Image 1 (spheres, rainbow, N blue to C red):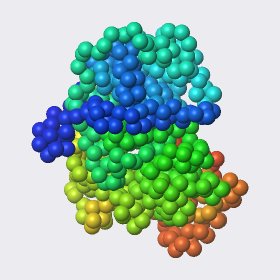
Image 2: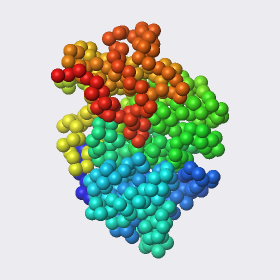
Image 3: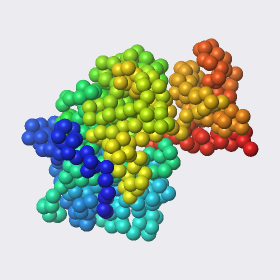
Image 4: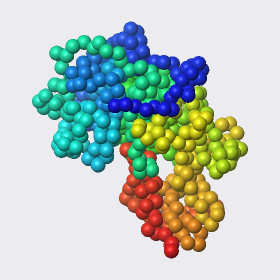
Length: 542
């Protein structure tokens, strides 16, 4: 595969001179661990239905990485070849990612929920040489699906099945003892490390290219801001095929020579049990994970005192959840904002979590700049809402084969597609996507503010507000709501509730749709483009 990360060259000299790009790959911290703490636990892998997790020390992990790397070479994988793997959270996911680095290949994790439609596009677009799947996961036969796709994948050389049989099994293909030692160079710090497709909040997947320098510049800054260290134990429950899981739950603990504990199927009661058994101290995921933990404790599960720090990204955190996490879990809930293209650009530090996480999405990490601009590209003062632009160390290398979509100006500013405000201290607040802005009769509707108010209603589990077309006003407002088990809620209840909270009548939704669940990306982000498509049918247009 010929990669085209054209956004890297202009930043190389300044980012390296400033120390943000350290010119390291994950091999440096791994070698440090082998020298300083080879017998420390690197990975603990819990699988649903299994009583005993797999535990690997740094020495054991390194040995398996080496065998998998040699196995990939024996399958014909070389430098810049793409290895696609559709695996749940498991030690094999981490080892395979590291093995790609060791031979100069590019890791391309894809979400377990994807099926033939998405996978055919991704594997062909990325010209994947090897495709690794579980035989069965959550009752679905991945091996049968993958074998049925082979005729349409001309670039693919080998299907590998975790838990499979015969020559295509993970053990036979990638854990063989008869492969020769590695001789070729591994991945360089400016080589493409990761190909990850955007999760689809806009409906169009794009192949994001990251290098070790772009990704690790973000992780080092994040580590400092979140006050993480060698002794932390990180719970990896968010899907590792998303950047949150890959970067902050798999790579970050290895950089620290810490321990990561993996859970393949999310279940809050089990997560609390694992956290207690393993001494978990930190995790990162979307807000539903924290809400589930709170519910599990309220249902009788014990808390884990050491598990006192959690970072949420993907959507603004409802203030009520911050209060619940503190009172029920004894946990500081830190907010963050980022994208697959940038990693976590902003975070709220643990020391400011209680006063800032509910009203902001953090402030920029070192190495990153941001600004809010109006429709003409002019910077706006604090408190005014506009388009959010970012630039700096962790900006991606570009979209694979689609440089025309990079949305980056000549001076390096990337248009995030988000709408935000910045306060006097530099903390941002995401107020919606550019396409999420609802303008009714010339009045901008504060979508996030109304969503947060509705989140505080005891009947509501999830809420999302979108606009729908109207001939007279341009747009009207619809609230999509899913309810907590056994709860009741209707339009009159919503109107009375917002009136009681003294919300301006102009901001009230004109329509309420009660749904069983709202569409999400694999990482938990609400897919408002799907809701807008539904709401469009409600519109009154000529």
